[in-house]
View 1 (cartoon, rainbow, N blue to C red):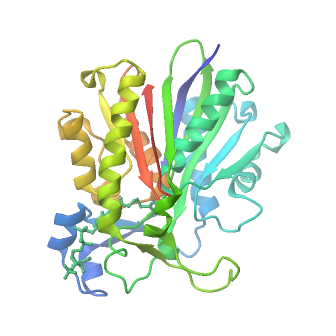
View 2: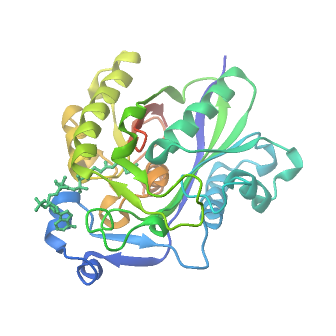
Length: 319
Ligand code: ACO
């Protein structure tokens, strides 16, 4: 049996920065409230000329370059996004074309799992690689969330941001990915959703969230996911070198670090200057930790995410 290793990572953030001071001018809020309740100082906003696919392309190219692998060896492309430019064709086939890897005719499909999308993409690709069906896979988490922000709703417009993160995965003789776990509970669907009728695609759509209720379930479910990942691998929490969490709220991340008895210095935090980029946040954090030299080969990483659905999960990885 084969295992999955991360061969290379890449990411992309739009250049345009939106600070809390900028938001103070458009909604009734303060820099202090936003920092205390969320941990966010500024976010990145895509330009009109940018798209979900254009951001994914840059992150993917950087991951392919970092992996040192010939792009034509890629046998599968999975894009996790809830903000595709078009409902179909999907983002993954657009990316396949833009990257120029159409010659292999490799499968290319999207996963819709909101903030847990990258963990889901990793889990699916891991199964293909473990079974021997695929040797190299490209997985991407990308979002154009600010296109769906209601700029009059102070409880949500302070949170969301745009960006992309990617990883090239490769079959290996040793882990790699020790485990992935994903859970979902559709009973919570209405607490975090995109407004609008399913049949009227041309009406304005906005992110709607009952934040306080989401917060409480997130802390409980992520706590269970962290425990599950450790128990499944028979690992003590001291074995974790880095927590690479979804970046929704600093207080949620602190609660997970506390559960792992991990000092915050061992957590890859991007929230302060990136906000919540949904499916892009975990691969963005992973790439930043790798590129700035904190995450080293052989380190044990715990990736976790929670989001709309609700869908939540973890991945335990030897980098
Ligand atoms: N500025 C000032 N006051 C505000 C703001 C703001 N930007 N937003 C809300 N408030 C007010 C509310 O109106 C409320 O006032 P009231 O007491 O007079 O009614 C008060 O602050 C408290 O509101 P809460 O919603 O209870 O605030 P909370 O401390 O829960 O923070 C937040 C809100 C930041 C949204 C938090 O609940 C949160 O982070 N939730 C989890 C988000 C999450 O994990 N999402 C999942 C991933 S996202 C995805 O899947 C796309």
